[in-house]
Length: 438
Image (cartoon, rainbow, N blue to C red):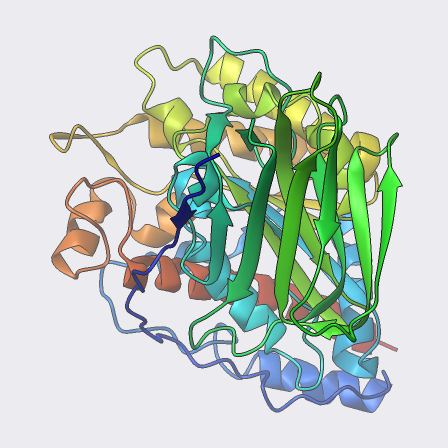
């Protein structure tokens, strides 16, 4: 058997745009006096972050909007209170999207802001997928190194009916023995650690998943959950590198399919699980039969959907179908996480084949506002915050958007992450203010 090794090496540039005003907070007991102090800090400016001086930004739109019931967000904010004021508990946020999310630049910036919001609480990375094993672009911030031959399947492949889950993508091997190593790199994540790992995979094969470490003193406990379709490993200490083996144990079963990895620990803080597939639309995400089942393992407190840019670029885009698809996605989330808050982000401004503005962005926003009224979800108007129709050209001129006038540069995604964080903290500040009332 021929063994091959592949490794990502390119590192993106990094731009830091905004300064959070919550870094001075320490986990303290929630008292009325301290609530007032926190609220004052949150509202010392129009937003809790200092925004860059960019005349094309639509800062008047930089808010989370509710057209209907927002009670799920009150529950989410109450759980956030435990972290901010007591330094206890974990918060799980799941960000679902297309290429904007797969690259983990927008999500990374939001994750970094949230995880450094309160000194002393951090948690970890959460769900990841080794995209390079499926022959797709991998986020630079974690580095999968693997051996063996693997093929990928994405939810955008319409002719294939294979089972997919929360990743929207899978990787399959037919080799008798392959390996995978996951490590973290870059200045954003100086050290991510974990002591538990769930390896999500199909169970219709006789492959065995194993874990090992270069330190023979590390004790690892392995549990196979056939019903849950995962193999779980517990380590007797905090680890910063994961090493797995995939071994075929029966010659009659000739393939193994990986759905993703969940890296866990018990530290207080925030997990932001990012899952995106290049080109994925609402229709594509509905093809993921085990989406809800695997989402349940992440125990989401907040689910952020950034799905719509690929729907809007479909020549056959229909608002009614798009709305129906989104209602089904929301239903699937609530089937396993009925108390989770849900946030929809409208499309980034974009052009059709670089030549003309995509006018479907307005229709996407209108659909999301209707869903807010009827489904009790929040909406962050990415389109409006960018500056509205045609604004992506200004982002391109400022080196914030790429020349395809669809995708952002690293700096542009960082700016989107900072602006979304600002809107989320403003909404949290309103919650804190209500708690301060006698």
